[in-house]
Structure formats: C-alpha cells, structure tokens
Length: 136
Ligand code: ATP
Image (cartoon, rainbow, N blue to C red):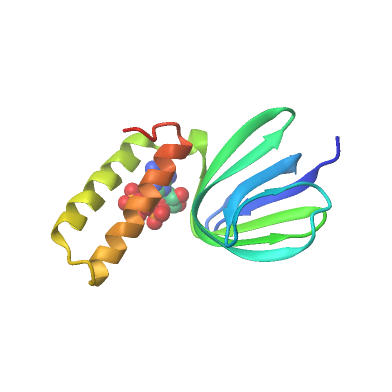
C-alpha cells in the first residue's frame, strides 16, 4: 500500500514521524482526509485531533494550534503543542478543564481572561477526547 510521510513537530520536540496510509484532521475548510499524492496546500490548524492510519490501525494525536503543509509525499504539522493519545495525562487535562471552567464562570465575555480560559478549555477537551475520556 502506498504511504505518505507524516511529521508532527512542536518547538519542543518531534512528536511523530513515520510513513502512514492516511491522515485525517480538521483544517481551515473543515474535515480533510489526506492520502498519498494529495495536491499541495497549506492550512492553519486549530485545536483539533489528528487521526493517523497505518497498517490498518488508527493512532491519534491532540494538536493545540499550528499549521499543516501538505505535499504529494509529505504532511508536516507544525504545532504549538501536540501529544499522541498515549502521552496525554488525563488527570492534568481534567484539572485544566476544571480551572478553565471556573475562570469562565467568573470572567466577562469580552475580556482577555475569558478568551484565554476558553482556549484552555478547548485544549483540555480536545486532549480528553483524543485520550478517549471525552465524556468526563
Ligand atoms: P496545562 O494548564 O495543564 O499546562 P495547557 O493547555 O495550558 O495545559 P499547553 O500550553 O497547551 O498546556 O502545553 C504546554 C506543554 O504541556 C506542551 O508540551 C504540551 O504538550 C504539554 N501538555 C499540556 N497538557 C498536557 C496533558 N494533559 N498531557 C500531556 N502533556 C500535556
């Protein structure tokens, strides 16, 4: 089966690097599935899951914003933060979710703290979803 190279990197580390069959994520225009020989494009990535198909199995990563560059033989995700599902500390994400919810309850919709708390909440919810704890 033909493959495409996927690299997920952050300023801190290389999170994933391997030849895979398909990459599915949410880019600017919505959900997208990338197969080998995809047309080149660049897109911002929000706080989202990246699903990786390899050898008939699916792996998942949580990405907290960044960019994706697609070429016919490579997909490069440059993320502000990213973790593979088995690297996610669920307790930490639950604590971050709780903190963000408490801040949201106090902040005003138009202030900086509200927006920061909203983003923190979205990062925590995405991590929980990717780690299969989305309903907690
Ligand atoms: P927290 O408030 O728990 O730090 P955060 O959303 O503010 O969460 P980020 O700024 O997105 O954290 O990430 C900082 C670093 O910590 C990154 O390297 C990220 O991969 C890592 N990280 C954050 N939350 C988790 C988690 N629940 N499990 C594993 N790594 C995490």
